[in-house]
Amino acid sequence: MGLQHSQGRESAGKMTVSGPLDLNGAQLWPALLETARQAVLLEQVRAVVRAAPLMRPVTPGGRRMSVRMSAAGRFGWVTDRRGYRYADRHPEGMDWPPIPPLALEVWRAVAGGARDPECCLVNFYGEGARMGLHQDRDEADFSQPVVSISLGDPGLFRVGGAVRGGRTASAWLGSGDVAVLGGPARLAWHGVDRIRFGASGLLPQGGRLNLTLRVVT
Image (cartoon, rainbow, N blue to C red):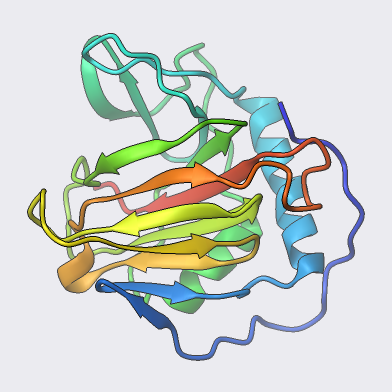
């Protein structure tokens, strides 16, 4: 599934955060996680998917998604014929594992004092996988941001406005980059058009991991 071992050591000290870049209202933090810390987070994600295996969900319309998903935290986001929703258990019945500690550190560095996240959605993009334009609106409080952490192969991230069909802007998100949808951009339409499969050395067999942290309640 692309989550093979790679070498790395955790760097000492707290994360250093400088100002973000703007992408159509979304905040981009390039290379927020250095290579060693990417490897640490990858190990933490492996522990998540050992406890709650990746699955290929089905949309309410019956379409099987190209990404594989799992989650960590109090809730996980799931989809099937019954609709999009948050659930307190994996579809196979097990509890969701805790959110990776380094993902929480990223959240606290860039989320502007928001409440701690209750869900960390894990998306794995294999070769040819993509994510169509969508809004994150299954949460109760849109004043809380959505924070996205990229690991592995670069993904072409596209962001529009709060109304579908408007102008969009795109940027490649590389391993260690972080994106934040908050404020006026909280309900922006966004997606991943494609990945550069095999371009990163973090996942030796290729692929992209995206961790999306959200406050649910």
